[in-house]
Image (tube, rainbow, N blue to C red; front, side, top):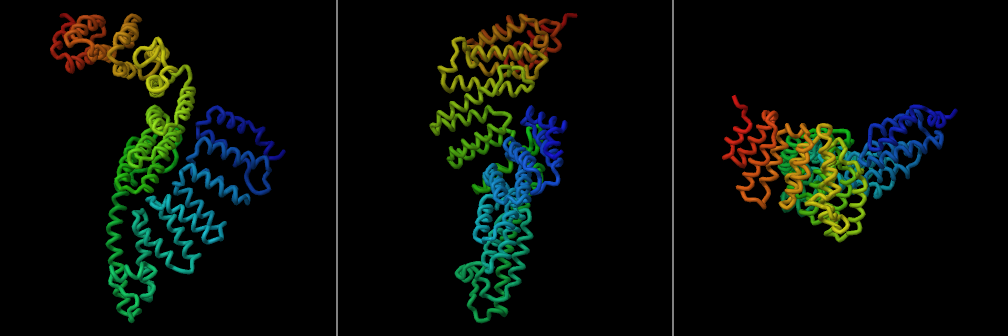
Length: 544
C-alpha cells in the first residue's frame, strides 16, 4: 500500500481532518493535521507521490487562508517547494506571505532574501529586492540581520565600494538593536582607508571640503593629513553614535524589552494586559516620531500578537484618518480587522463612518448584511456576555443609523426594537446560568432615553419583581439600577423622583434581603438622596 492510500485510511488522519472541519478557527487542530501529514509523508522529495504532495500543498494553503499571519508556515511552505525544485512556486508563496503583511514582515523578508541570494544571479534584479525590503522593514528595531545580508551581498557582488559606504552610513542613522556592531564596522572601514581619494566614497567632495575642511586633492594624500582626516570623520561619527545609541537604549528599555510575543497568537491565546499596554505606549511613541514607514511597520508588528483585539485596528485606522487623511487605507485596515478581531462593534461603527465618507454605500449594505447574518438567532444564549452586548449594539446601530425603513419596527421602544428587547428578556431570564446579567441591567439604564423609562420599568424591573426571581431581588445592584432608571428620568422633577423611589420602589424590597441589598442602596442614597439616608436605615433596620 502506498503512503497516500495508507494515510487517507488512517484513523488518526480521519480524526484530525474531522476536527479541522468542525473547528476551522482553531490553530492547534490545523497544526496537528499538517504535522501529521508531513511526518507520514517523510522524506518529502521529488519522487514523493503526486497525490501526497497535492494533499500537503492543499493543507498548507488552506491553513494560511484561515490564518494569514503565520510567518513561519509561509517560509516552511516556500522552502518545501524549493526543495522540490519549484523555484517559481517558492517566489509566489513568499510574495503571498509578504502581501498578507503589506510587505512589512521582517522574518519573511530575511528568509525571502536568503532564498533570492541563491536563485537570482542578476545583480540589478537582486538589489531591487533589497531596496524594496529596505523601504518596508529597514527601520525595524531588530533589522540587523537584514542589513547584514544587504552589506554581504554588496561586498560579494559589487566591484565598487561606494554602494557599501552609502548603505553603511544610512544604517548609522537608524536606532537598531545591533547598532554598535555597525558603528564598529564603520570605524574599521575608516581605518582601512589608505588614500585621501577614497574618502569620496563616503560622501561628496563638496561636503568633505565645506563641512570637514578636508581637501582630497591635497598633495600629501597618504601622510599626516590623511590621519587627521580620519580623526575628523571618527569624531563626527562618534557624535552621531551618541545620539542614536541613546535612542536605542530608550526604545529598548521602555518598550522592546517588555515585549515578549512577536509572533501571531491564535484566538485561544490571551496576551497579558501589561504587554498590550506596552504596545499601545510604543505605538504612541512611534507616532510622535512622524516617520510614516516606521509607524506602519510598528502597527503591523503590534497586530501579530494583538490581531484579535479591536483596539490596535481602531488605533491604526484613526491614525490613518486623522494624521494622513487616508480614508481608503483606513477602510482596508478596518475590513481586515473585521476578519481577525473577536470584538467587532467599534470597528463596524468606525468603518460605517469611513465608508459613508467614501460614498461606497453598496459596500456598506453588503457588509452590514454579511455581519448581521453571521449571528445566530440564539445569540442571547452565548456564554460570552461581550458577544451578546456587541450584538445588541450593532443591531441598534443599524436600526438608528442606516436604512431606517428596513430596520424600523412598529413595536419599537427607544433604542431596542421588540425583537432585540425579547432577546434581552430571554438573556435575563437565564439568571445565574449566564454571565453579565448585572452589567446588562446597568447598561440598559444608560441605554434608554427619557421617553422609554416607563417601558423599561414595566417590562424589565416590574416583570422581574412579579416573577419573584430571587437571583435579582436579593441583589442590591438590581435595586440600585431600578432607582437610577427613575432618577435619570428627565421628565420628572427632583421631588417626584425622590417620592417615587422612597414610596414606590423601596417598599417592594423584601426585608429578608435587607442585608444583601442595603450596601448598594446606601451607595445610591449617598450619591443622589443623602437626605433620605435616615429613611433608608429605618426601613431596613430590624426592630429590637
